[in-house]
Image (cartoon, rainbow, N blue to C red; front, side, top):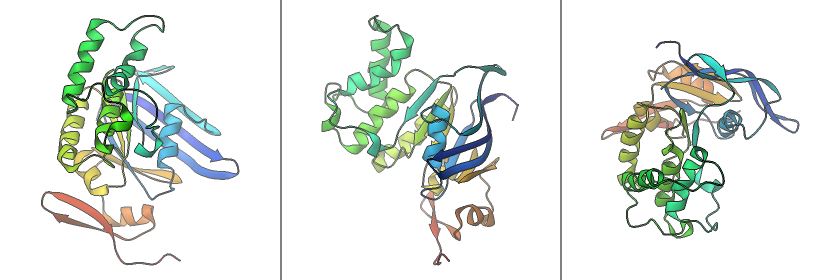
Length: 255
């Protein structure tokens, strides 16, 4: 891969109070990369993406963004948070949620242009939400809400799209469409996909990072079993049924 960095993390350390969540984290995300982030629960995956998004400040280390191989203050980022971080009581419609993804394309006192509304209609159709434009988000199913939030995350065609467990509440029918859509998005944007579903991640990403307090990077998805076992601190096997493999844990005990 050509060296066209988009985000570089150097010696990152993130703590909550006295608890050290991440330490010695180094990573370089390339333009149009498709990075899968895996790791055990509580290992720091969500904390890492919050640091990249600027939602939390690292205690030490450096995050640098790039455009055309030159450091810049910021890049365009789209973010799909975990489902359980969404306030379903907030009075906003599907249309308004997706339209809000274009807020950075106008000044705060300006109205959205017809071209913006046209893109929203196209995104609603692409997300399979036609007919639900005016439905409040609180009346949506979990999968419908995830699709609306994904539409918001990608409508501005950001430099990187960050997805935190995107298929948690998406129905199986749309799950295959989701990964086809991400493949299309990846032609224009880098993608960081955080997921506990290792099998699905390995099928769709180009490179892997395992986050378990620190970060270990693998440049492709041909992972030796001992690499996974080492970084999860658990023995893991790969099984498959149909066309979709899954990672499962062997019988084991923790000391």
